[in-house]
Image (tube, rainbow, N blue to C red; front, top):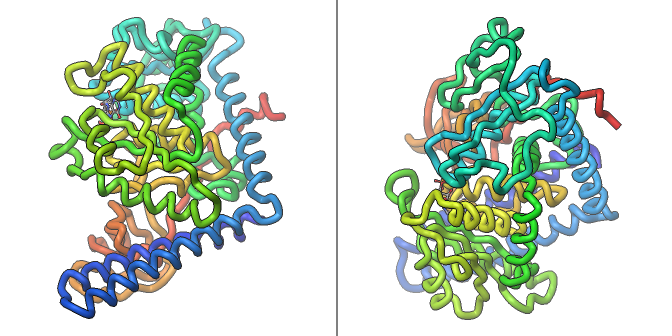
Amino acid sequence: PSLLHEQRRRKIENDVVEFWYFMRSELKKMKSTSKGDIVRVVDRVLSDGANYQKTLHNDFNLLRNVENAGELMKKESEELGRLVQKRFKYLQNPKDCASAKKLVCNLSKGCGYGCQLHHVTYCMMVAYATKRTLILESRGWRYASRGWESVFLPLSDNCKDKKGSSSRPWADPDIIRDAQVVEMPIVDSLHPRPNYLPLAIPMDLSDRLMRLHGDPAVWWIGQFVKYLTRPQPQLQTDMENAKAKLGFSKPIVGVHVRRTDKVGTEAAFHSIDEYMLYVEEYYDRLEAREPVHTRKVYLASDDPSVLPDAKSRYPHYTFISDIEITKTAGLNKRYTDQSLHGIIMDIHFLSLSDYLVCTFSSQVCRVAYEMMQTMHADASAYFKSLDDIYYFGGQNGHHMEVLEKHISKQPKEIDMEPGDSVGIAGNHWDGYSKGMNRRTGKDGLFPSYKTQSKVVIVDLPTYSEVDE
Ligand code: GDP
């Protein structure tokens, strides 16, 4: 299928999802203010509506796979992935390290594993864009004092030293152009901010990526994460052993429940029921297509009490979890070799799942979602976030392009004209999103279906040296 065809197909698929979010939310509101017969009618419409939704979802799935298109797309994704990984390898293994241009990134950002991995990801994106070999400083890492290479392969085989004839902190391109070594700050302190930060994608691959993937920026980010987290042989063995020990097999839904220090500061509390609603929906859809013998859930959490709670409330589900094996989760054990192992395993198994239910306010789940993209043709829709839409910390603005005129019907809504650009702050999962119309400067709600995510395409080095 052509790029335009794919874009139209995805738009319709998304419209159907948004339509149901809207109907369900309005019907639930109606139910809460009604009595007697009306409540029964609303319940029936909700239940039948869910069935229509299920069929529509499965129909779209069939459409995606018509004439073997799914397989062809999978091949295309693998081919693109190989090409990108080859470029990374080339960048990271310069012919002469002593004279190579370098970019230094220090892992000592004071935050969790997901946040630190995203920090290195952003550094490597800058390295790619500036054709500088990324040097990662990770000794004394809070998760493993021996550093990154205690679990992951070195980013380079021949160039790990940040020595160079001249070194400068990140600054205007004119100032740093000739410096052999450039030192990176954390993304929050990055000045100037280049246009190729997420959610941008490279121009030379943009046509292929946009045809392939519903959220090409995440595919692109996923490739960096993949390169950075290539496991050491020992970790690889541990992962395979854990897989067998846990009985990790498909179909399986990955659920990540982020609690402890996050609740009340950066995210709201969500009960296990809120997650399971979408797990249930996933399996109901799947069962309409094929028999499901066991409804399996891979459950990850920083709060070990989530597992017994889930097991007792959902006895007809099989929960598998690393919590059971290592019992390391929890604040007291944070930032130790053992906790590093635990979080790597959790992200690994979440990313191997068929579908993810979590809160995108957590970097743990966003990393899992990014890695998931490297294993499918297009897994952009294989998730349900209970809160945020996908974002990359420190990203450049995410804008929606307005496709249809909208006249606000209530004070909380904003007006829109086709062609307007709306900076999106979040989706309320009730048919409406929130954002700011850049033309009018007004902030408020707008119907999500009248807009479409804008893909930012930037000119980046094409690494023609390694092209097939
Ligand atoms: P965020 O704070 O959720 O956005 O993600 P970060 O990765 O930056 O920090 C959270 C840290 O808490 C993780 O890196 C882990 O150390 C720990 N953590 C959170 N969720 C889990 C989980 O599901 N499993 C394990 N093993 N650790 C977790």
